[in-house]
Amino acid sequence: MAGLAVGFAGTPAFAATALEAIARAGYTIPLVLTRPDRPKGRGLRLEPSPVKTLALRRGLPIAQPATLKAPADREPILAVPVDVLVVAAYGLLLPPAILAWPRHGCLNIHASLLPRWRGAAPIVRAIEAGDSTGGVSIMQMDAGLDTGPVIDTVPVPIAPDDTAATLHDRIAAAGAAAIVEVLARLARDGRLDATPQPPEGATYAAKVTRADAALDWTRDATSLDRQVRAYDPVPGAHAIFGDEPVKIRAARAIARAVEADAGVVVGCDAEGIDVACGPDASSGALRLVAVQPSGGRTMPAAAFAAGRGIRRGSRFGPGPRDRDC
Image (cartoon, rainbow, N blue to C red; front, side, top):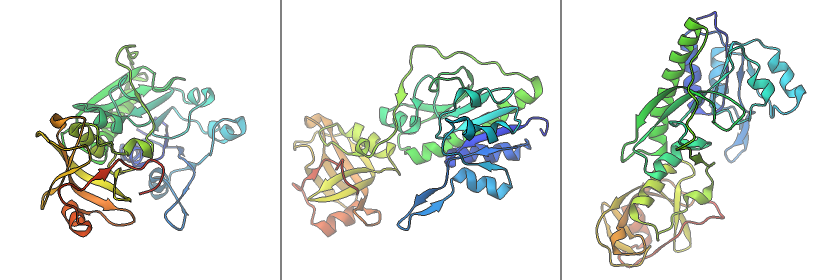
């Protein structure tokens, strides 16, 4: 595989899974692009991305431009010859000069079955929407947002209890295997066949904000169940009890008639806290199974209820949208 020089651009764990697979397959990797180190934790210490951490461990050349907009930012990168650039959740837009840099162009590992869920957060949006199948697409990049022709797709079933974290890991593994197979095809044939995306069926997976994860008890229990799973672990679905913000770390919809206002506790026992949902009795209840109080650790909802004196008739408010949990 040494005859194919594979550049790589990526930042989070999703991308590191693919980089590891490419390295293990034996390809020459003359350059790894990743975002600059970011401050994290209470001490705001600069921490490298998962991709940088892996590249350092493997002794791969690294570049961390803050932007690729100016020619001066791109010159050191364009000076490195590569046959193809693999891109996975890099976080910077690639200007035309970068797209034209590799001999075989740029291949993107995208965590959806395109054209569904183009954009920044396809895994979160697929769970939130109740999709039964997600997946990964290997796409030849163009100047649009995830609009390029598709080389390969791998469907990944979405289980009823999948969270963003569990689905992420399966899709990352599928994407890593798929890109290695596509690169093998490119090394063998010197070309890749790609199919233009159909215009119908395109949806946009907007970047996640904290406000997206705020629970609104007037929605039905099934929708709130999906919301909790979609935003686990980050930023975490959240609500209010009294004046205390609380993250809902695990929950499940209870399909039964509930004669109570949205947000009112209708059951509380060792299994959790049942909260009435929706505009009417048919909307069910959301059973809170694990919660994380403000500034605390995740705990069973039953323990949270015991510590706060929660009982039937207690009330949860909608999630705060403008302050931290």
